[in-house]
Amino acid sequence: MSERSERPADAASDRPGVDNFVRALGVVTQAKRGFAVGLLVAAATYYFFVVASGGSPYSTAYLVALAAVLAFTVGLLATFAFTAGAAYRLYRRLE
Image (cartoon, rainbow, N blue to C red; front, top):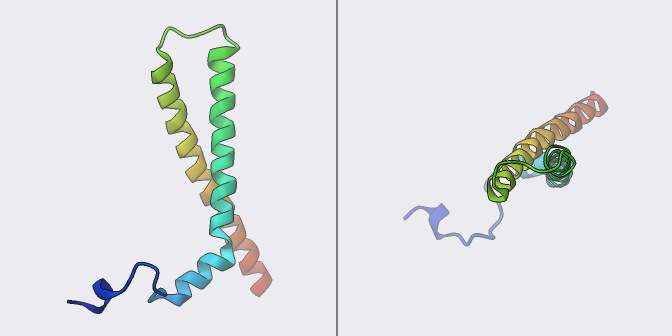
């Protein structure tokens, strides 16, 4: 068996450089912010296009599923944008 498969899941990473890079960019914080933005966009979209317009001919389950897809997609895009911004700021600071 390989050494990797014998290690417990919580063992230290084999790639500390990647861990340090992720920590320096604050990816966890960026992801929290990104998915919060995604949820807000999905909730606002649902409100403006369904609730405020007086309803929809589609079922609620279908619309909630579409809102979940929108929240996930916008969350990923916002996380990418926030992380790219953090990488740029880190690049400028280290330059």
